[in-house]
Length: 343
Image (cartoon, rainbow, N blue to C red):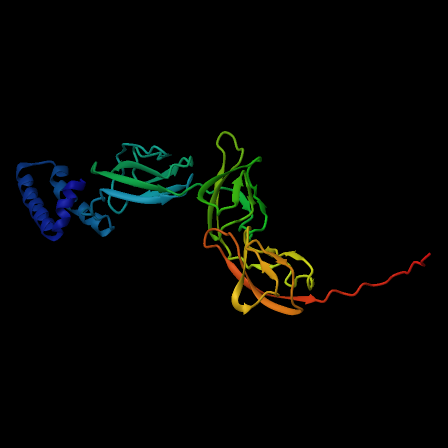
């Protein structure tokens, strides 16, 4: 019926006229030959049936079904497939069937609507082939969205590590079955930091960006639930400074020794007096390790600039300069606390 009406619908007016004319002639001939009435009425009924299909919107010349189709479905979810736009008299078969889902009710389907249900086991693609009412294949490609994990991971963001400062952050998880396992998924940590079973620790020794992913798995049986937590950030450039910017007062002609110490950045540090930005007290020197020593030979105050450089990696080393003021005083006169009588 469908194939015959397809031919009629291409030129409906002409075909209908021809059928009506043929029916009239056949009717006259049948009357002459005594043909049964039911056979005389068939051509006319056929023509009127095609006209009725068109009037009701059942276009017998409907477009053919596409050779390929696709859709997206959630893991474990369903998708309705409606082929009424191209297949009038139902689907004929399913071959091959989907590997990661199910489509019931294809055989003897007469409404051109079936439902694909994904098995929810984590496969991200699927494929199958349906056949329309003319036995033409329609190959379906299915995109399956990743399984949405109920696991929630903390912290949501990592605290910013500071160069030279101890760092310790522990991850926690909820929403699944404890205990949880934590393993690196992607990226790398800056020098000085490490990761082990959910704990970030160490002392950062290099600046740079952080891009690190952690896979978190619970203890669900038989298949563990998992999620991936991605962290990003940066380790900032350190600010270096002297712990004690004013050394103790020295005494003229008396041996002097004082160790400068820095904070911020990564040890070891190196120290230099910047040329043209002050001078050390006469008789004193500053070693590269920060030891201020010697025997002062002149009284007075001295201000000089000390450049501190650290050993930070990444974008380092880093440096900073700080003014230092120190005083060289006269040797104080002895203080008499008591006098012992002479014999």
